Length: 398
Ligand code: URA
Image (cartoon, rainbow, N blue to C red; front, side, top):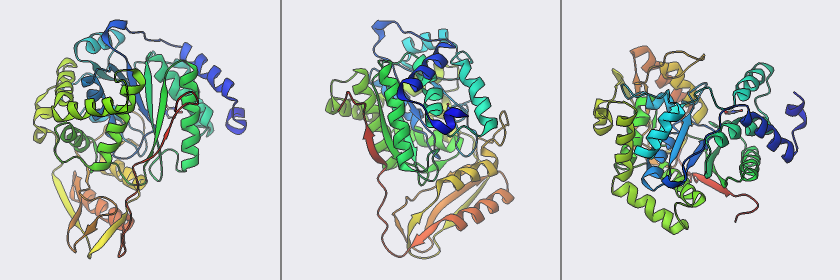
């Protein structure tokens, strides 16, 4: 409670992170397999970046032992999206990561319970005392777990805006700087991109739909520009930070080649096989689960799509059955939304701007009412918001 109200000095935040990290297992990696890196996102709506970034970086020579979370509240979790694939094992132990990093180059699993057990205790206390929203406590919580993975470099996607954990840019920037300071004090090159989370990221919200979109980016099928820009920028920075690429232009080339030559997609397929999942729906996304009811929403008049607040969209996914109200709840991975048009696009009258994927008619009707009540139309042009609003580096880097 005192930390929540008073904050911490940088040295205190580092010390707290160390104590939390040292409360559990810490991973090390054999030095001959290439650098190890990871990404952390503070979470958002439609955020499927990890599903693309991990195989992409693996294809470029970075080993990625990604430990992800499940969805709770208005943001969905990477692990839940991955588990749309039948049979895929995500209960990975260190021996599994060792084997997968050697065979495939990356692995994606859940918290095994061995990282920073002290964080779990403290987080539970924060949850019931209303002290989650504290920058030093968030920093120690996230960084103790990420640093325990033993990375050579770390990129942070710190989101701000309506659908983000931090709504204000200034707070997001302060969180980014605090996390970078801790990462670098542990000798791990760490950088952050501040990214926009005013509206959902990409064209889909919902587990199977987001997995499909990630596969489409990896197979070069008309990727949504903002999603592609953010994912490739994070991947490029991770290549540079870990030393897998000597400089930005080499990283950019490597990332482009891994996408265009499909090496990144092949990595995803290899990981699914190695984690005992069925590769068929990855190779043919039409096999992914589909919701039975589709409802198209159309522009009421010729107008510009001016806003679609992300937080309410995230809550709508929960209401459709695609998110958890309480920990451990079953979720419907097929439901969600397809959003073919982006904020700033001009639509003709009657043009589709959203397709609801619902389990039943009542869900589809509820989604229609919610979406039509929150979407904002404008007669005047609306400039698209840049997806990356800043790159933040440590004081020792430029
Ligand atoms: N995610 C975490 O792991 N910890 C926090 O404190 C906040 C988000």
